[in-house]
Image 1 (cartoon, one colour):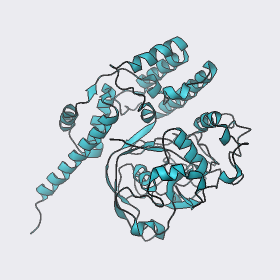
Image 2 (cartoon, rainbow, N blue to C red):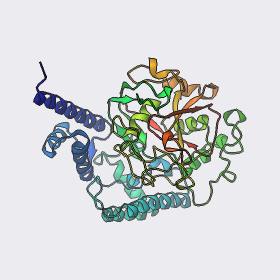
Image 3 (cartoon, rainbow, N blue to C red):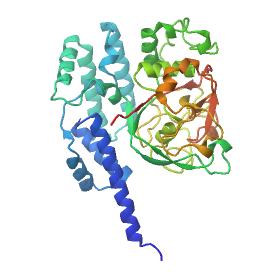
Image 4 (spheres, helix red, strand yellow):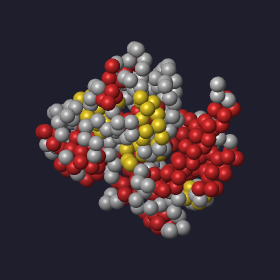
Length: 415
């Protein structure tokens, strides 16, 4: 007997509703309060990604107990954290704020007259960015703003979640199809298989030169001239002069970093590298069964690949995917946590798979003794479109550095 199509629709609808409820519950564990703009963004996401009506999504938000209507966090608006300015001189703070403001203001100008996911127009968003810049560059106003964020009434701020909220996307718990069955792809991408992942956070952008400099300034052992020989192949940060990135490239992805160095940065930030499965799920942006986050075709308006620009571009130059991530296809290859295994998909666990040692903490604690090749994903600006697909896999030994290899970080959600 054939299934009733109406029943199938209802089952699918219920499933999507439950997925959205799980997403909201995960969000609540991190931030029990949201702004009205965030509420608008969640309502839009409920419709676009989960197929829910505004009324249904509103009902779920009300039932969740999320508090709506908190004040503006200027650090979050500029993609900074309070921790990032600690131990910085006023000149250093001013430079950080100026760079962050320029990056987001420029991106807003390029966006034209669209309505943002938070409900603001781009003009309104630029006004807010200016307010954030002026407040955080003024020592007295900055202290007053930090004090307001630490007020218990402003529950968007907690010491434990401030780094999470800055330029990271929350990827909800759920299943996705990893890999491909396309006969034209490489054998190590096969077979397509169902993977279940717990919720996690991942950086919206690859780590930039400016962010990495903050790390090495605080950790001299990772300076260009001090790093131990066993942790790189001789080209570590080779384009930097001493310990300063090239002029005008603060917002470019940091490159020529080994897996060891990427792991060290991530640990210092209280994060880690994404597993290969996490990277692919996040890169897909909720789009299943396609070569790229947006479909089966690619062109130079969507990514930096195949020499169509001729060089690396600053992060955020290309449209975000469905999860809010930029530059997952092209620009620079990205290190992943896993050991590379060409046959891994044939026998991988279906829940939270990791190739190699499956205990994250054990790998982190023994990072610098690990010599096995590690996974690279995403492709680069000088590689053909076939290699920037979301399922394409690559690998290098952990000492390897190259001017087209960077990384982004991830973080587990503690429920």
